[in-house]
Image (tube, rainbow, N blue to C red; front, top):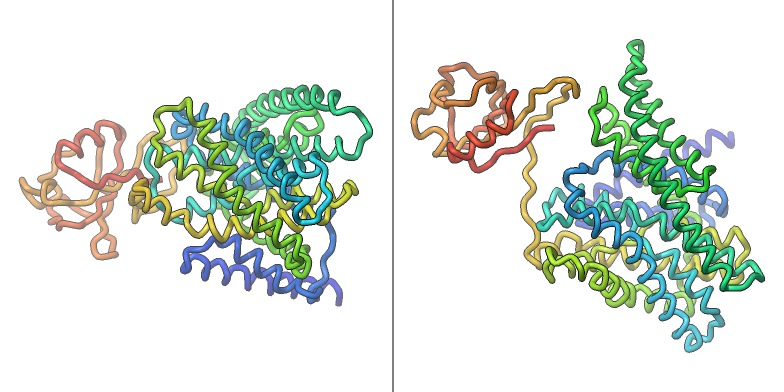
Length: 498
């Protein structure tokens, strides 16, 4: 009966979490916050007993691998190329700066709260929270379907997807330093060496495994069961992380770059693979946040020293540390306006990753590790509540948002097909010389294959009369020429269909 009860409880938790996600979308709150809340409710006073830091850390490792890999697949290299340098700087030096600023703040205020904490312990607490959480940023930005000016969305996604390795390195090294009697001078030299090796090896192997994954997926030719392509790519993602870690590289950086490479090369069954990883990523996010919610002791979060420290650190990180680090390291990049820098400063969400990193001190027996875990958990909740619920509103307030158009057509074509699909909305300018399809002069190699009118779809003929507001699904062998022609004809809404 134990196994059946476990499945029953797990199914109920997943069901409730999905409903909570729907509620979160309507309220404009991060779905991940409500997933966490569901876990906390069912874990309160051991209603569902769960106390395994080891299993949570293992689950977090698996989830983070897939979250980063899927995030990399969804990121177009053409979009992040203009912000590559600034994103990498924020993901490395921005993390270090945030950690030291917050660490210094914690060290200064700890005595006033009656807490004995060394500077290394304060820095460890800050290091676990120094990276923005990729799961939170990816899910919120994509669910909003809100465009951001000045390439801010690819910048934020690049930063959040690639800054976990730096926070991981800082956390692991500080745990080692606190638990060792060695000299600090040795460890500072070792820190630089370890960082350089992990980043170089992680980036190099991530790229190589990405190219290898593309080669394998395109040549394995599993005609008997196409679903096995998803399993093969999943194995490639896990192999990239595990092998890189064993080779003393940073596995999280490697798996993100592997996904980035895979997502930017032509692969067979792309649509099926993207759908699989999107669903699997959401499942892992839900399970991970439920587990984290079950793990925490809600009563300990309400203790005076935890509550005051968490509120103080959360406010300081949001209002001071993140803005200072952002403005310092974006200063050389003149292309970003002051409003853009303010927005990047604000969207520094914390999520599952800081809590996962906070389990490392607990498992290593670092003095005061449970206190660090509770404070990090509370700061994460504050960040998701304050920053997560204002991602869209802040963009609108700063004048950086625009409506991101979404096509009413969904087309699944193999990457081997060179033709591209686009959606054109009929306006007055398009039909001023005639309102039938044959009156519209499209470039050669271009065909209108479907019309959407009042949410009804039909295949047009040459004599079909078009109405303002109709949406045309157009396939073309020369999409660039089609774009130029559409602009000449006064088309205002042109969307590439993927």
